[in-house]
Amino acid sequence: MQIRPLSISGAFEFTPVIRGDERGAFVETYRFEALEEAAGHPLNLRQANLSTSAKAVARGIHYALVPPGQAKYVSAPYGAFIDFIVDIRVGSPTFGQWDSVIIDDKDRRMVYLAEGLGHAIVALTPGATVSYLVSEVYNPERELSLNLLDPEIGLVFPFDPDALLTSARDTEAPTLAEAGELGLLPRWDECNAYYTSLENGI
Image (tube, rainbow, N blue to C red; front, top):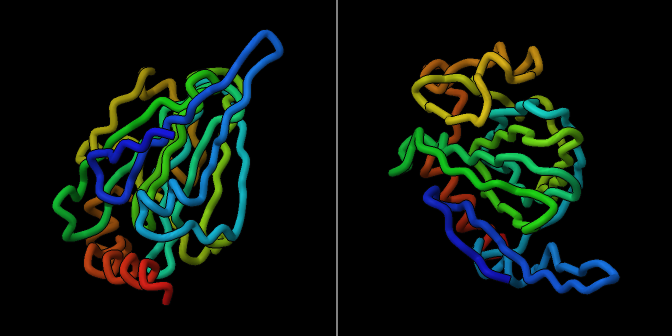
């Protein structure tokens, strides 16, 4: 399995080896030691989620407050989507910047994003299926959204933004600046302290 750090600290792309023949294919989609090597600590798996989306559905930008936040390991059992990772940690050297990876059922890439990072997906195919392995169970009081179309973040989409299908929650979400003014964003120092506690097994 190849591991590539993304331009956002705490985010990694995993590209597995696909072994196939006339019968089909076999691929390892998760290896605990590979993820531990990249992240600096194991993924403490608490919940697994699966979502399906019609083409041009957009979900996000979602995040959870730290601590504990919610780390995610994302893959595509079926179809294809663009996975966006947004640095929303106040004080981070790459605050407000983003990176993206196309995740599909052909190359079988996966993405890991650490606690405190924003996450969004845009479905490229009908029935695009997203699998999430996450480090914390769903907590509605600590899980928030940012506006996907915030020009300050400037995500680039494969479709006209007006054609994206989003939920009311995501459409009405605050911008990065508005969330910052309300004190609703994770802080770089708090995230780093939490990452250190995970590395030390605390």
